[in-house]
Image 1 (cartoon, one colour):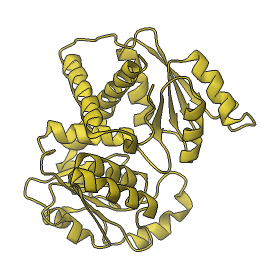
Image 2: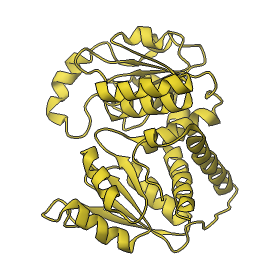
Image 3: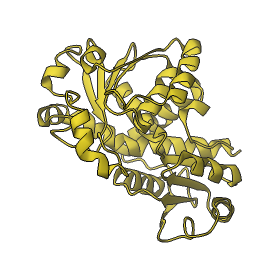
Image 4: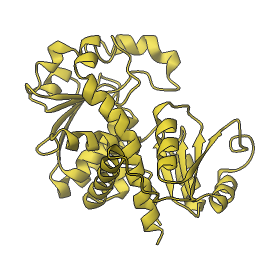
Length: 307
Protein backbone atom coordinates (compact mmCIF):
# COMPACT_ATOMS: atom_id res chain seq x y z
CA UNK A 1 0.00 0.00 0.00
CA UNK A 2 1.21 3.51 -0.84
CA UNK A 3 0.27 6.98 0.37
CA UNK A 4 0.55 10.13 -1.75
CA UNK A 5 1.84 12.82 0.62
CA UNK A 6 4.67 14.36 -1.39
CA UNK A 7 6.31 13.72 -4.76
CA UNK A 8 9.54 13.11 -2.89
CA UNK A 9 8.25 9.60 -2.11
CA UNK A 10 7.83 8.66 -5.80
CA UNK A 11 10.20 7.73 -8.59
CA UNK A 12 10.24 9.41 -11.98
CA UNK A 13 8.78 6.26 -13.51
CA UNK A 14 5.91 6.16 -10.98
CA UNK A 15 5.03 9.83 -11.52
CA UNK A 16 4.96 9.37 -15.29
CA UNK A 17 2.90 6.20 -14.93
CA UNK A 18 0.27 8.08 -12.90
CA UNK A 19 0.20 10.82 -15.56
CA UNK A 20 -0.19 8.25 -18.33
CA UNK A 21 -3.12 6.59 -16.54
CA UNK A 22 -4.76 9.99 -16.09
CA UNK A 23 -4.30 10.85 -19.76
CA UNK A 24 -5.82 7.51 -20.82
CA UNK A 25 -8.80 8.06 -18.53
CA UNK A 26 -9.25 11.58 -19.92
CA UNK A 27 -9.18 10.23 -23.49
CA UNK A 28 -11.83 7.67 -22.61
CA UNK A 29 -14.01 10.31 -20.93
CA UNK A 30 -13.88 12.58 -23.99
CA UNK A 31 -15.01 9.56 -26.05
CA UNK A 32 -17.89 8.92 -23.66
CA UNK A 33 -16.29 5.83 -22.13
CA UNK A 34 -16.54 5.44 -18.35
CA UNK A 35 -14.54 2.58 -16.85
CA UNK A 36 -15.72 1.83 -13.32
CA UNK A 37 -12.25 1.07 -11.96
CA UNK A 38 -13.20 2.05 -8.41
CA UNK A 39 -16.70 0.60 -8.40
CA UNK A 40 -18.28 0.32 -4.94
CA UNK A 41 -15.31 2.05 -3.31
CA UNK A 42 -15.56 5.06 -1.02
CA UNK A 43 -13.25 8.06 -0.76
CA UNK A 44 -13.37 10.01 2.51
CA UNK A 45 -12.55 13.70 1.86
CA UNK A 46 -11.46 15.57 4.99
CA UNK A 47 -11.41 19.35 4.54
CA UNK A 48 -9.85 21.53 7.23
CA UNK A 49 -9.17 24.05 4.44
CA UNK A 50 -11.96 24.89 2.02
CA UNK A 51 -11.53 24.52 -1.74
CA UNK A 52 -13.34 24.72 -5.07
CA UNK A 53 -11.14 22.65 -7.38
CA UNK A 54 -10.08 20.01 -4.85
CA UNK A 55 -13.61 19.13 -3.78
CA UNK A 56 -15.18 19.19 -7.24
CA UNK A 57 -12.36 17.21 -8.88
CA UNK A 58 -12.13 14.45 -6.27
CA UNK A 59 -15.88 14.10 -5.82
CA UNK A 60 -16.57 14.09 -9.56
CA UNK A 61 -13.61 11.82 -10.23
CA UNK A 62 -14.74 9.23 -7.72
CA UNK A 63 -18.26 9.26 -9.20
CA UNK A 64 -16.94 8.80 -12.76
CA UNK A 65 -14.82 5.86 -11.60
CA UNK A 66 -17.90 4.16 -10.14
CA UNK A 67 -17.26 4.99 -6.49
CA UNK A 68 -18.59 7.40 -3.90
CA UNK A 69 -17.01 10.39 -2.13
CA UNK A 70 -17.84 11.59 1.39
CA UNK A 71 -17.32 15.29 2.16
CA UNK A 72 -16.19 15.74 5.77
CA UNK A 73 -15.43 19.24 7.04
CA UNK A 74 -13.91 19.87 10.46
CA UNK A 75 -17.41 20.86 11.55
CA UNK A 76 -18.77 17.43 10.61
CA UNK A 77 -16.32 15.16 12.43
CA UNK A 78 -14.63 15.04 15.82
CA UNK A 79 -11.15 15.56 14.38
CA UNK A 80 -9.94 18.87 15.74
CA UNK A 81 -12.59 18.86 18.46
CA UNK A 82 -10.90 16.59 20.92
CA UNK A 83 -10.41 13.28 19.11
CA UNK A 84 -6.75 12.44 18.39
CA UNK A 85 -5.72 12.21 14.75
CA UNK A 86 -4.65 8.59 15.18
CA UNK A 87 -8.10 7.57 16.46
CA UNK A 88 -9.91 9.34 13.61
CA UNK A 89 -7.53 7.68 11.14
CA UNK A 90 -8.17 4.21 12.53
CA UNK A 91 -11.94 4.67 12.39
CA UNK A 92 -12.27 6.27 8.94
CA UNK A 93 -9.76 3.96 7.28
CA UNK A 94 -11.62 0.93 8.63
CA UNK A 95 -14.77 2.05 6.78
CA UNK A 96 -13.45 3.69 3.59
CA UNK A 97 -11.16 2.57 0.77
CA UNK A 98 -9.14 5.77 0.40
CA UNK A 99 -8.77 9.11 2.23
CA UNK A 100 -8.00 12.56 0.85
CA UNK A 101 -7.05 15.30 3.33
CA UNK A 102 -6.74 19.05 2.77
CA UNK A 103 -5.30 20.61 5.90
CA UNK A 104 -2.78 23.01 7.41
CA UNK A 105 0.14 21.24 9.12
CA UNK A 106 1.89 18.60 7.03
CA UNK A 107 2.64 16.69 10.23
CA UNK A 108 -1.10 16.08 10.66
CA UNK A 109 -1.43 14.21 7.35
CA UNK A 110 1.76 12.26 8.08
CA UNK A 111 0.35 11.15 11.42
CA UNK A 112 -3.00 10.24 9.84
CA UNK A 113 -1.24 8.16 7.17
CA UNK A 114 0.89 6.33 9.72
CA UNK A 115 -2.26 4.92 11.38
CA UNK A 116 -4.36 4.48 8.22
CA UNK A 117 -5.24 1.08 6.80
CA UNK A 118 -5.88 2.59 3.34
CA UNK A 119 -4.06 5.02 0.99
CA UNK A 120 -4.01 8.66 2.10
CA UNK A 121 -3.78 11.48 -0.48
CA UNK A 122 -2.47 14.95 0.27
CA UNK A 123 -5.06 17.35 -1.17
CA UNK A 124 -2.94 20.25 0.14
CA UNK A 125 -0.98 21.12 3.25
CA UNK A 126 0.98 24.24 4.14
CA UNK A 127 4.10 22.40 2.97
CA UNK A 128 3.07 20.63 -0.26
CA UNK A 129 0.40 20.52 -2.96
CA UNK A 130 1.43 17.44 -5.00
CA UNK A 131 -1.90 16.73 -6.72
CA UNK A 132 -1.72 20.17 -8.33
CA UNK A 133 1.70 19.36 -9.76
CA UNK A 134 0.33 16.16 -11.32
CA UNK A 135 -2.23 18.31 -13.13
CA UNK A 136 0.41 20.88 -14.09
CA UNK A 137 2.73 18.30 -15.57
CA UNK A 138 -0.14 16.57 -17.36
CA UNK A 139 -0.93 19.94 -18.95
CA UNK A 140 2.70 20.36 -20.00
CA UNK A 141 2.61 16.93 -21.63
CA UNK A 142 -0.62 17.72 -23.50
CA UNK A 143 0.86 20.95 -24.85
CA UNK A 144 4.14 19.29 -25.81
CA UNK A 145 6.36 21.38 -23.53
CA UNK A 146 7.55 18.71 -21.10
CA UNK A 147 10.80 17.96 -22.92
CA UNK A 148 13.72 20.32 -22.18
CA UNK A 149 11.38 22.37 -20.02
CA UNK A 150 12.68 25.50 -18.31
CA UNK A 151 10.16 26.45 -15.64
CA UNK A 152 10.20 29.85 -13.97
CA UNK A 153 8.21 30.11 -10.74
CA UNK A 154 7.57 33.70 -9.68
CA UNK A 155 6.21 34.51 -6.23
CA UNK A 156 6.05 33.22 -2.69
CA UNK A 157 8.21 30.39 -1.40
CA UNK A 158 5.19 28.33 -0.40
CA UNK A 159 3.69 24.85 -0.79
CA UNK A 160 3.51 25.26 -4.57
CA UNK A 161 7.18 26.20 -4.71
CA UNK A 162 8.07 23.17 -2.60
CA UNK A 163 6.06 20.92 -4.90
CA UNK A 164 7.68 22.33 -8.04
CA UNK A 165 11.05 21.66 -6.41
CA UNK A 166 10.15 18.02 -5.85
CA UNK A 167 8.76 17.57 -9.38
CA UNK A 168 11.80 19.12 -11.03
CA UNK A 169 14.20 17.16 -8.83
CA UNK A 170 12.47 13.87 -9.69
CA UNK A 171 11.89 14.43 -13.42
CA UNK A 172 15.14 16.25 -14.17
CA UNK A 173 14.11 19.56 -15.78
CA UNK A 174 15.34 23.09 -15.08
CA UNK A 175 13.51 25.09 -12.42
CA UNK A 176 14.17 28.71 -11.55
CA UNK A 177 12.47 30.17 -8.49
CA UNK A 178 12.28 33.92 -7.94
CA UNK A 179 10.92 35.17 -4.62
CA UNK A 180 11.09 38.54 -2.87
CA UNK A 181 13.66 38.81 -0.10
CA UNK A 182 12.21 37.34 3.08
CA UNK A 183 9.92 34.96 1.16
CA UNK A 184 12.52 32.43 0.01
CA UNK A 185 11.88 28.71 -0.27
CA UNK A 186 12.18 26.46 2.77
CA UNK A 187 15.86 25.68 3.28
CA UNK A 188 15.28 22.01 4.17
CA UNK A 189 13.06 21.40 1.14
CA UNK A 190 15.61 23.11 -1.11
CA UNK A 191 18.39 20.95 0.33
CA UNK A 192 16.35 17.80 -0.35
CA UNK A 193 15.62 18.92 -3.91
CA UNK A 194 19.25 19.73 -4.65
CA UNK A 195 20.28 16.32 -3.36
CA UNK A 196 17.71 14.56 -5.56
CA UNK A 197 18.71 16.72 -8.52
CA UNK A 198 22.19 15.17 -8.48
CA UNK A 199 20.59 11.87 -9.51
CA UNK A 200 18.08 13.20 -12.06
CA UNK A 201 20.23 15.91 -13.63
CA UNK A 202 17.76 18.64 -12.72
CA UNK A 203 19.00 22.23 -12.68
CA UNK A 204 17.58 24.21 -9.76
CA UNK A 205 18.24 27.91 -9.26
CA UNK A 206 16.82 30.27 -6.62
CA UNK A 207 17.00 34.05 -6.85
CA UNK A 208 15.22 37.30 -6.00
CA UNK A 209 15.01 38.73 -9.53
CA UNK A 210 11.89 37.57 -11.43
CA UNK A 211 13.18 38.90 -14.76
CA UNK A 212 16.32 36.78 -14.45
CA UNK A 213 14.19 33.71 -13.74
CA UNK A 214 11.83 34.28 -16.68
CA UNK A 215 14.55 34.95 -19.27
CA UNK A 216 14.17 32.32 -22.05
CA UNK A 217 11.87 30.14 -19.90
CA UNK A 218 9.42 27.79 -21.63
CA UNK A 219 6.95 27.75 -18.72
CA UNK A 220 6.13 30.65 -16.40
CA UNK A 221 4.00 30.00 -13.35
CA UNK A 222 2.95 31.75 -10.17
CA UNK A 223 0.55 31.52 -7.22
CA UNK A 224 -1.42 33.89 -5.04
CA UNK A 225 0.75 36.09 -2.84
CA UNK A 226 -1.37 35.51 0.29
CA UNK A 227 -2.46 31.92 0.77
CA UNK A 228 -5.28 30.70 2.99
CA UNK A 229 -4.51 31.65 6.58
CA UNK A 230 -2.37 34.63 5.54
CA UNK A 231 -5.21 37.08 4.91
CA UNK A 232 -4.02 39.44 7.67
CA UNK A 233 -0.68 39.77 5.84
CA UNK A 234 -2.25 40.63 2.49
CA UNK A 235 -1.56 44.38 2.41
CA UNK A 236 2.05 43.98 3.49
CA UNK A 237 2.58 41.19 0.98
CA UNK A 238 1.24 43.33 -1.87
CA UNK A 239 3.95 45.88 -1.02
CA UNK A 240 6.67 43.26 -0.61
CA UNK A 241 5.80 41.58 -3.92
CA UNK A 242 5.98 44.78 -5.96
CA UNK A 243 7.56 43.93 -9.31
CA UNK A 244 6.58 40.26 -9.15
CA UNK A 245 3.38 40.45 -11.18
CA UNK A 246 3.53 38.27 -14.29
CA UNK A 247 2.43 40.66 -17.01
CA UNK A 248 3.05 41.04 -20.75
CA UNK A 249 6.39 42.80 -20.18
CA UNK A 250 7.64 39.95 -18.03
CA UNK A 251 6.31 37.26 -20.39
CA UNK A 252 8.16 38.95 -23.27
CA UNK A 253 11.40 37.90 -21.56
CA UNK A 254 10.44 34.23 -21.83
CA UNK A 255 10.62 32.22 -25.05
CA UNK A 256 8.23 33.40 -27.75
CA UNK A 257 5.85 30.45 -27.37
CA UNK A 258 6.20 30.14 -23.58
CA UNK A 259 3.17 28.90 -21.66
CA UNK A 260 1.74 30.40 -18.48
CA UNK A 261 0.32 28.21 -15.70
CA UNK A 262 -1.63 29.15 -12.58
CA UNK A 263 -3.07 26.75 -10.02
CA UNK A 264 -6.00 29.12 -9.31
CA UNK A 265 -7.70 30.98 -7.77
CA UNK A 266 -5.96 33.88 -9.50
CA UNK A 267 -6.05 37.44 -8.24
CA UNK A 268 -5.90 39.47 -11.42
CA UNK A 269 -3.89 42.63 -11.03
CA UNK A 270 -1.75 41.16 -8.26
CA UNK A 271 0.34 38.07 -9.07
CA UNK A 272 -0.83 38.05 -12.69
CA UNK A 273 -2.23 40.69 -15.02
CA UNK A 274 -5.68 40.55 -16.57
CA UNK A 275 -4.09 40.44 -20.02
CA UNK A 276 -1.98 37.35 -19.30
CA UNK A 277 -4.89 35.52 -17.68
CA UNK A 278 -7.05 36.14 -20.72
CA UNK A 279 -4.42 35.44 -23.37
CA UNK A 280 -3.42 32.14 -21.69
CA UNK A 281 -6.90 31.22 -20.52
CA UNK A 282 -7.12 28.06 -22.65
CA UNK A 283 -4.11 26.39 -21.04
CA UNK A 284 -4.92 27.71 -17.54
CA UNK A 285 -8.43 26.27 -17.52
CA UNK A 286 -7.24 23.08 -19.20
CA UNK A 287 -4.78 22.88 -16.30
CA UNK A 288 -7.68 23.30 -13.86
CA UNK A 289 -9.70 20.57 -15.60
CA UNK A 290 -6.70 18.28 -15.44
CA UNK A 291 -6.99 18.18 -11.65
CA UNK A 292 -9.93 15.83 -12.34
CA UNK A 293 -8.07 13.55 -14.72
CA UNK A 294 -4.71 13.50 -12.93
CA UNK A 295 -6.36 12.67 -9.62
CA UNK A 296 -8.38 9.88 -11.19
CA UNK A 297 -5.11 8.49 -12.52
CA UNK A 298 -3.64 8.77 -9.04
CA UNK A 299 -6.55 7.02 -7.32
CA UNK A 300 -6.54 4.18 -9.85
CA UNK A 301 -2.76 3.80 -9.44
CA UNK A 302 -2.97 3.79 -5.61
CA UNK A 303 -5.77 1.24 -5.73
CA UNK A 304 -3.59 -1.08 -7.80
CA UNK A 305 -0.80 -0.85 -5.20
CA UNK A 306 -3.11 -2.29 -2.52
CA UNK A 307 -2.72 -5.67 -4.22
